[in-house]
Length: 249
Image (cartoon, rainbow, N blue to C red; front, top):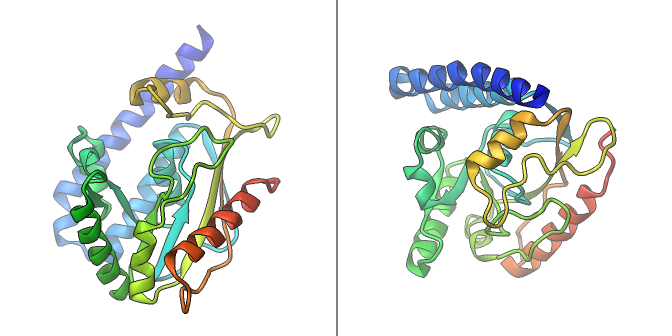
């Protein structure tokens, strides 16, 4: 009963924050510069995870400016919020997210690039679009696992989208994420979002959780010069595996 009460209180805190975000998206984003929009997205994401009572720990050096392609492991719907709070970037996401109520609007406003994952032609289009964005100096982020994992094991990495960094001659930076219990340091399954789990079930479990710490560890920037995408993918995956095992204290 106590955890249910805590969840409801957090939900009541989140609702007006989401409404405020939508207000700014529709009322102010059209006349704001991209830099100011980025600042607001970072501020808004930080406010939301605070209302979820999630502590954010950032290790390493987030990029101050682009071009750079962030390559991260994928655990939960929270990953995007946590990375936005640590340092705003533009994500590449599956196309159906754009049609999700509220979340699709927020994702679109934050500069997300949407891809039809099952379409080879759309993957080629996305590589071209990402390459151009990197050439324009953007900070992009991808989840090369292609889906969420269990937070314990890394899934195989797909190298397709990393080709954009090769074409743009832009560096890549590994980002290792994990959610842990504050009192024990053990992996937290509160934000888990794998298999047949629904977003609402994952959200409710996160709302009921106590003492979650989101750890975002930025690794060393890797050059793509004279490397093909498969070699870069292997190097970055190994970096992420190593960074995930580091203690956050």
